[in-house]
Image (cartoon, rainbow, N blue to C red; front, top):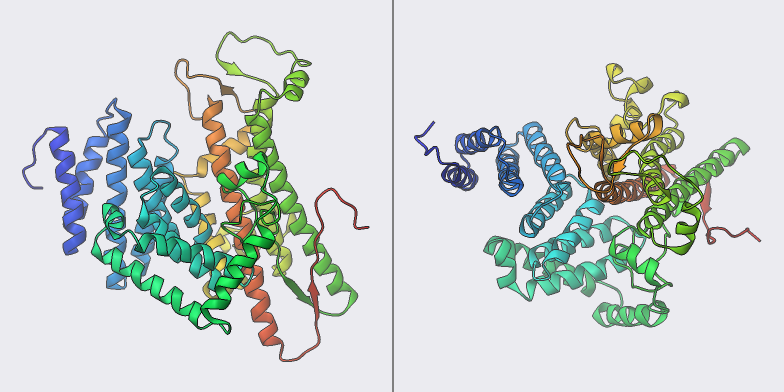
Length: 500
């Protein structure tokens, strides 16, 4: 190793330059050396959380640099491993309690880029949105988000033009402020965004009704669907990006901001058994949506601890005073329940896949972790049907990648452990940090942040599921070759109402 100062600041600066220069000249040795310096500094356990966070962030950049080098060399396996390492470390970093705003912005942006690289477009859009909400001049995040939205618009007919409209607006804003793009990137990024904008404008010109027709559609959308304005609760749902819809940036109106996510059609045989199979799938997806809406409702109810009804109901129950900072009450219970319900949604998605693809997995053993394997056993290898589909279905691949991410040892594997603790033993939350708190005993504020992340994760998983179904149904219709099948087109009604 080169002769490097023992001073921590000097070593950290040297490590950063080694990683950055290694990325530019594609020198894996320099990148590894820079990473080694950072790891040696992290071992010292500095008391400054800001310093530790900065070191962790620079460490993630070393894996991003390796990803690009391995990708260019065609070493796809090592490229995927480097990208996964970067993503997991960024996810863990963003759960830190005291992360500076500048570091939050960069971490959210890089995590969005990493997610987008692996086809997890919904989550990428969420993180781009968070990044520019922290810095309204973050035109790189807006431009990248615009690119992702235009791609999503092409991949799914549902809300396609609405997503395209939002993507086009973001690309136009970013390309109109190239100097702001350069705050976070270089001229290459500016040129890339300008190319994407040109492609998007070309798509409008290719419409049958041309640019004028697109502008008329825009005006009609705002006139017909822009009112009435959504109330405070729904506005908060939009801000937190918890609406269950493929319409990624709906108008802030009660007319457009709805949980309207569902597959458009469902093909089956014309016999009674096939009809019952299709009906069962509709029930299952309705149940998944219901659980998500319930978890989201519980989350917001927990945050509104001062509501008169909640306060009145809470007074009925008395708890022993443990003489500590431990918190017990309806608001805390609602938060913990919302967290558990949102995690359970992933297992219900696994159950849906088992039914929809007729995998034949034992129903009492199906969960999000093991449904991907033959007979729900990792020892038996990948399930052949899923293995085949993952290669050709982008959105199923996104779900599969989420599964690998979800049950990683580092992040967010502990979420699964928290769910199990809450289910079997009881999760204890604290109102303030007093004494030494383990990962199992945390503050209410910590758990609220984790619950919001879990809700966004569940939302993305459900949207990937529906996108996969639409993708699969399209392929099935193309392969049908005129054979008779029942195509079920679905209507909708509001929750809590009878069909009549």
